[in-house]
Length: 125
View (cartoon, rainbow, N blue to C red):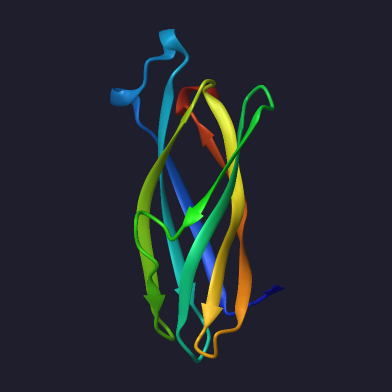
């Protein structure tokens, strides 16, 4: 697989205090991903791979088909946005990974998901 500059990935994360239980080392985060197709042909997202690292450096790998139950087609100039979540045992962590994509000619490629932080806002000043 080759990396392609045709697709841009941006992520915003937020701490979900109402679903978290710090006294039980349970910190819930939501993240919204925007995938933009900057190319001239349609692409499809086939799968995902994540590395989730908690504040103690423990890594968890997650992979699977599509995102939130779909394998979206993204037209040229279009975008696809979804929200998902992660639960950590620490109030600080990171996520990063890649999407497995395919172009209209059936050629597979991979798009990196840049590292982003998951954190309880009161910890970061």
